[in-house]
Image 1 (cartoon, rainbow, N blue to C red):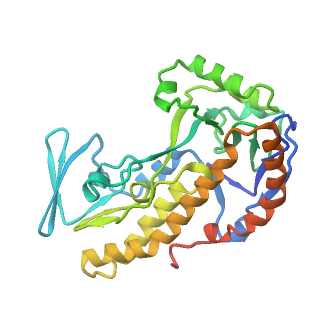
Image 2: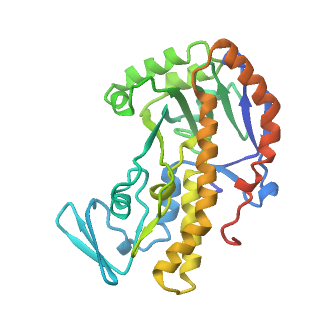
Length: 333
């Protein structure tokens, strides 16, 4: 991943509103020396490939959709849409924000909460911003309404620049946008970001295969486990993307659960210990992400002016207060 992806040394936020011509208000350093690990930007597909490379192929069964779950005694029986079944000593539900397993652990539990923001994103060639050198930075811009970010995520030229746009949904869900043609999505984005500083327009002109997602999180669950079934990752503590910690939390969960399983205590106790350890950190990050998202909503001109100056003053200070998030080491927890 280090060979193909880029370790960022700073997180750059431009807050003099959208006509700031890319002038940086502040930089938040993220060198490897600060937390003992690099700040990597990468394609999610590259991360999946890296993880899959260390899992024996016979353990992976793609194309299965869970429709039923029964826990009897010391066994869990899973039923899939194709009629097949599987039995196991335990089930780890890592099936995301729309978790099917969650519905079995907590039948009447909370549903994903729509935060009122919608996300667009994709990848364009690195050459699109050849005239706008950014080094190893992620560049972000807060508008009077919405937010835009971009940065390098791969050494490959064809799709080595990632970009994303966050906007108030105004009651229009992601499915409605996904039903549009790509040229219609590009036009919507051009109009929404009209007048924003370069190279935002150039990135949007080059955008293809635009992905649209609702911005969701999940309220506190009463429990993460039931008998021999445990929820982890977004199934247990789905977070909106505004803290950039969703995948990180899931990877931390996997490592911590693996370490606890080595103690070989009774399974329900292991699950309880896992929840007691992980819940405070996970829920704190979910709250941070939702709070960060509030800066990307629609503001009046006066409100945006105040927000920009508050961010300029407070972000360098509050960033230091985020060390607890980045310095966490699941190997030593």
